[in-house]
Image (cartoon, rainbow, N blue to C red; front, side, top):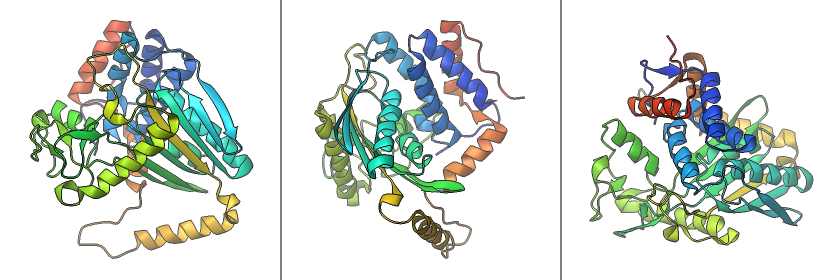
Length: 358
């Protein structure tokens, strides 16, 4: 869900400049600043506003509190020809994500598959950024992550799983990849915060209050419903559990129910978030031309299916690529809450503020 506004828009290059300077002054090394900027700008360009530029103030707070190291010493251990473990050393999850996917991709390019478990990490933003990084190398990519409890179990009254996202990307030479990026909850927690910041009501069947009752008021929300809502939430709860096993269990980390809350108040203690990344080389399974022809045929069949009047069938990623083209041309919008947050960062770190497009 995007919130484009004609009131305050910035060009990509200026947003990248601002983020890089703020992160550097907050104590990050160059690699960490570049990874955070890459992930947040990628998400904002594609319209994933809940996981884009609005998260920068949170990461700065976590860096200042000591929860996250701005200059970690991440260590990768290759355990088998196609597997490895990355100790993120309590650094920024974005650097951990891109680093781990790079290792997975290198293994996939050599032996056909590459899988990396990540431990001692932190929030990494939009999972789709890392699946996309694999697709940009001609590989199929998948990314998973656990988080602290936000989501009810099916028929449960208290949060148990995190939003535990699943991201999948498949490359298509000469065209944008197939890109699926979804929470296993009905909506991500950041969406609730985003709606609350702009005074917008939530859709039905996505969130619940402290008594487990469905609510559409962001101020009343204490938990999210699993994908499928009240009636079919066992599906989302099951997927959330699968992501948990891949993320925390493989990496030897605490499961999400035991993690410290992302939002604090403790901003000094590292959280120990887990991730999992998988890269697959299509040529390890079939001829490259065959894979590409079949994927193109599938997407043509999908996009040309009959639809309801006034509607359109979209493949995963189609909305994102359209939004990216529009925002690259017209600028990335900042809502009123983000305008205030970015102005405060500019003043705190003595950085030239973002300049709105005329």
